Structure formats: C-alpha cells, structure tokens
Length: 302
Image (tube, rainbow, N blue to C red; front, side, top):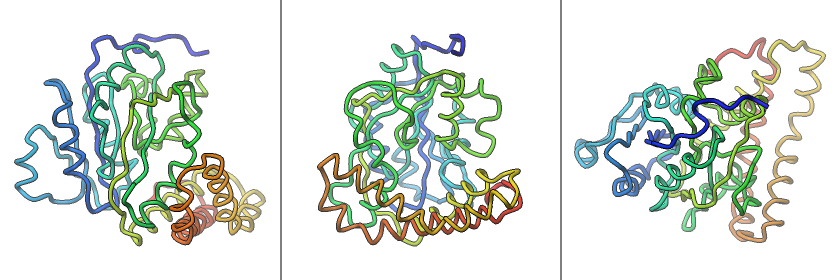
C-alpha cells in the first residue's frame, strides 16, 4: 500500500475544468452554459481545441481560457495539455460532447474533500435523442459502467467524467508525457495501491451526434496506439499470433457489450438499432490495433 501523502485530502478545494474538443461538431456552448452558474471565483475552465470559435462565443464566456491544440492531437493529448495549464488542487475532465449536471462541480468539490483517493468519477447518461452514431459511441465507450450503481471503489473511470488530485498525478513522474490516457493512468494508481472512486451524483450527459467518419478515424488511431504500446519491445513470436487473432476483436467486444446491455436491461432498442455502426467502430479499432502490432516500436501516434 502506498503511503498517504499531503494530497490525500484537499479541504480547501478549488477545481480546474479541462474541456477537450474531439470529433463532435456541437455541444460546447451547452457544456459551458451548464458550468456557468456552478463555477466559483477561483474555478478555472480551459477549452482545448484546434478550432476557431466565433467572436460571439468567446465574448459569451469571458471566464474561459482557450488553449490551442494541434489538429492531429487526440482527446487524451488535449486533456494533458489542459492539465499542464491547471493550477488548482483538483482537475476535472470532460469533452464538448457532454453537459454536466447542475450540481457537478459541487459534487466534485465535496467528493475530493472527503475521499483520499487520487481519482473520482461518475456516470455518463445516454444521448436520449441521439441517432445511431451517438448511441454506438455511448455503448462502445461507456457500457462498462452500466453496472455501477452505488458509490464505491472501481477498477476504472471514464475520462470524460473524471477528476483528479493534481499532485497525485504529478507524483507519477511523466505519466502525461504522451497524453492523459485514463486507463494507463488508472493502472499506475492501482499499481501503487491507490483506489479509484465512483460517485453516482457526479453526472454528465452525452449530447449530440459525432461525425461518423471522424469517429472512425479516431477509433483507428486509438487502436493503433494501443497496438504499438502493447507490443513495444516484443518480438515477432509475440506479434504474429496477435495479428492473426485481431479479426476476432470486433466479435469479442460486441459480445461483451451486448452482455452488459442485456444484464442492465435498459436501452435495448437503441442498442439493436445502432449495432451496425457499433460494429464499424470496432472494425476501425481492430484494424488500427493490427497495424500497431506491425509497428517496430511504440512510437508516438502521429
């Protein structure tokens, strides 16, 4: 068990919010409008984006710090860019695709004041009026949390609704060098004997649709990085079986997601309707992962 540190509890909690834009084409204004009445004077809000927003949007939210991202950067790399700018004790993450609940910031503050874990997250509510692409992204990325109901310890959190004690992340020494990839970050915390906490009141809702081709490209690039990282420093005797078996990835993951949805008993209709799109996203990931296995090293994804 890792020793308790000075960051274990933060009684005078101030929050920095990092909002990364991804392949979505709408939602940022709604996200900022939801945050506006919640923020305190000391609250920092960073929007990390490669887009140029109209002057009226910039004037509408003068309390936002706009950070420029490279067009090639993925969401985890944009989160890391915002994290580096943050100065408050707690850093909360989301993307422009999500609208925080009216009590979101208050719950983040309260949770970090009473819980000595480095990372705290909560549920992502589904896109009620979204189309097949929106629902496919929801099931692909968040079905693993459908069984989470009560507050407690969990193995992982979705970065789109997660918050961190800044000094706990800094203590990992270079953990954000290639981006804030939440599964890798959480694995390091668990390896140090630290826990992650699920707080049901810390809610955001997915809004709007994602552009299909943009999300396909994103899934390919995420799969590419995963494959490169997984096979870093491994020889062909390890790589070849992984490459041969990679076509099974869509079947395995679609079966896992279907099992979660069936056990949960909700959203069966949207799941059936979005299944072709979900399979396309899984194919894009598996193609990227297979290409990553072919790479000679785990070099940074371009």
